[in-house]
Amino acid sequence: MADESKPLLIKRYASRRLYNTETSDYVTLEDIAGFIRAGREVKIVDLKSGAELTRSYLLQIIAEHESKGESVLPLGVLTDLVRSYTGTAQSVVPEFLASSFEMLRSGQSKLIENMTTINPMAQMPGFKAMQEQQAAFFKAMTGRWAEGEGPTDQAAAAPDADAESQSKEELDAIRKQLADMQATLAKMNK
Image (cartoon, rainbow, N blue to C red; front, side, top):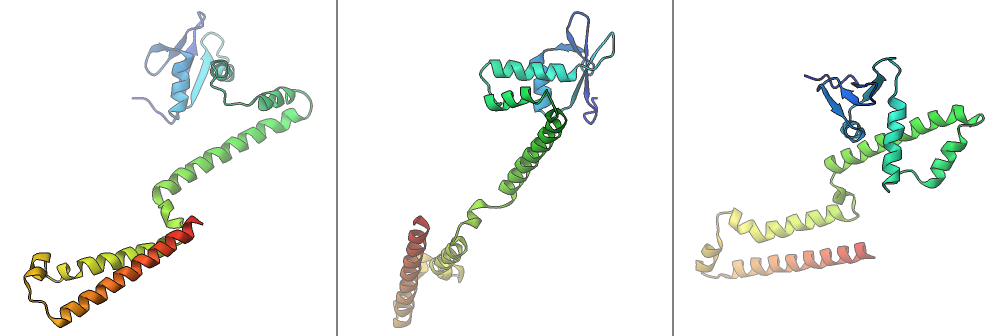
């Protein structure tokens, strides 16, 4: 069983083939890119010398994707990276890039968290009023049914003055609620 908290160790043989030490098989650059996309850290070392080669292989993966038209890095950024290898900028750029990507990761995770835990519709102006109007409308429409009177019971019951008066009041309340909802929606569309 693989310990995913530790980096996946990939060994490069003299033939330049890459060997996954966890699964005991050979892997390609695309396989390594897949491990990284899945959230796994990798460490690539030369079998003979023990030298760490991770950086150069990651750059190779990026170069392959960029050459296939899967551009992530704008030309200006690539130009600035080349410029950063000279002078004093070399000491500032790695820290800046690291903190920028950390902010990006943090922002993405917070956005995803907010989208799954918070209803985005609830942030709309007038949403609460609309919910209250819908609840009142639903209550007015189903109020009698909840009290034990079904639609067939109402039709069978003899009409009396109180029932007609109550029905007219409910109908007027529903009309007012619909007018309020239309006004709210009209304001939201402006």
